[in-house]
Length: 244
Ligand code: MG
Image (cartoon, rainbow, N blue to C red; front, side):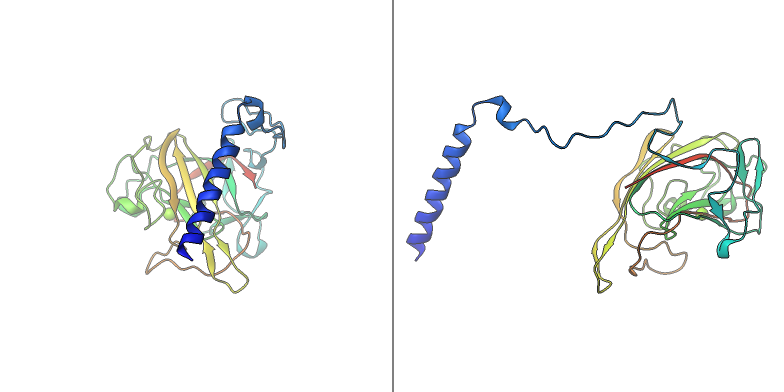
């Protein structure tokens, strides 16, 4: 039996060798289909041609408060700013896998420390927070500083600009997959560039962002992106997304 198996394996090995040996033409390994569709890149940080613009500085029509109420955040100077106590805002559309470009600015007049220093946050699928915080100054736990996956992943470096300056997150997100029984069969992954600097490199999400306790993995589908009202006057502008 073992001898027969060895013979079969040997024959397979020889056939594979012959097949590999036969490829002498470079054209044999050229793949011509499918052809990627054309996308026109934006100038600078402007959206590419296939992006959905979630905020261009002019209106808040893509956003809502919980329950569908119109957004009460302040719209001024091409930016929207958290109006303390009005609550977080959510995209009306839902998303899964995506590339998200978002610019944010921490307030200069926030002399608070730690987690109260320009805190906001970007929740992918309304569950997984990429932290927004003034981490150019102040002191907090590193797995809660700007660019952390809150309480899950410390950023690789601190690429923060000072409060009052605009900052950019470019986020590449792969959503977790759940089967029909609600079991997570593949984790989510998050990559983040902060002001062009890689700070999260294909981080494997442990589960939902939790302030207290451990991450959870409860089945969900596409969901809104949430911008957090943490009670500080954090501003946002130029938000666009490429959904997959
Ligand atoms: Mg936050």
